[in-house]
Length: 265
Length: 265
Image: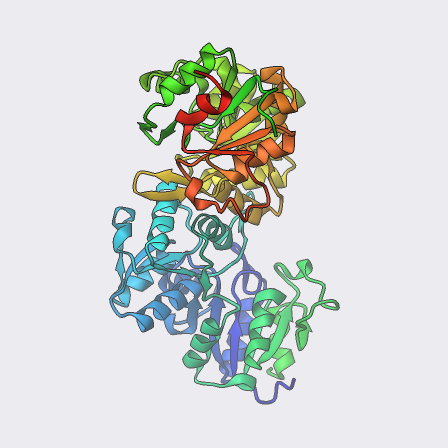
């Protein structure tokens, strides 16, 4: 698929712009070049632990300038989805600030686990403050009819001492106990794509998704009829591109090569 | 299958002798009659939260006399299994006293989650002190090669305000994050049956399993070539006996009718 129509770039964060706390060398300069060439940029991450404000500060610390409007997290997607379905909804979170703070800003009421019986939605993300009591409250709320939303289904999360359970693992416990499958709004999902294109005000082939994962970044591109650009940093080595059902349109060494791919100097 | 050869009874606790904190009326008297008629008795429960000592006291409070040797829990089965595989093993527990205290008595070293990298086994049971940190430690230990043992795979646990996540739900999160399936030693399992027959010093048709669940109690009986007696108390109404693949040999209203079934006065 041609890059000629591309006017917007949806760029993954972890594995693409940085690895945990360490920036990919040259990423900041590459983003600067692309921005100066007039492309719209949206940073899209499945991580629901940080708010957009926290990401603005994190990126600035790595020399990458971005406004809050240029950042979309699975926590924000979940909050906007719920607010669009039921304004002022009551939500029991099994999630961190990237969901709870963003949700509060949209008028959503965040419940303490003791109020699980009032919950209209249960939102599950990576939650490092998880307790059995919170897990049990989520199960009981879902059994009483609350909708079960998941920010993403990633099984693991790269912790500092190895892989730790991700949102998808926590959701698996709740699914097993409640018998209800979660509705995931993270990459790849119809809802994530809907919000991406709404934010960019562009359509399918006008957008390229850039990231290190076939199952999220490239899959999202294919679902949307957009261009998929895979960077060989981060988790890329986990995927066999040749045998993947869903193949990237372009493969580049790292985000540093993106300006060249786009013909930007 | 005939009851003529039966000399030992494996009797479930929750749903059969009591419902939560409430004894089944007449259960104590029925157990007394069976005991006086000379039957060996083993109380077998998948609950791994209480120690045998705690069960002796709980049963005594309901008028049922039992020694620790007459009680077998999935926590004890897990502890004995590990001790038989690796004496003085180092175990990271995601479980309560019914496993940890029983394991310590067998010389097993119980690790704090900060020592996950030393773990040779991870044992998962119902753990109401579960935290994300403990869950993450279990996943990292298993990723480093620790054996993943589960006391039972029950998805739910009947809490006072509704169903809460059981050992099987917690295990599902760890399985999703680690990609490793647990080895379950609770009812129904080869290991549970092995320890049951070892404790009773009897063989297949000399034993009757009595309980309210087809998927655990009656399944255990069928796996062992033993007699399956279903009581219609507790969770029995969840099962359709006529359509069940694994059918009980006898169905009685409650444990109160067991002496009559056995021809005991």
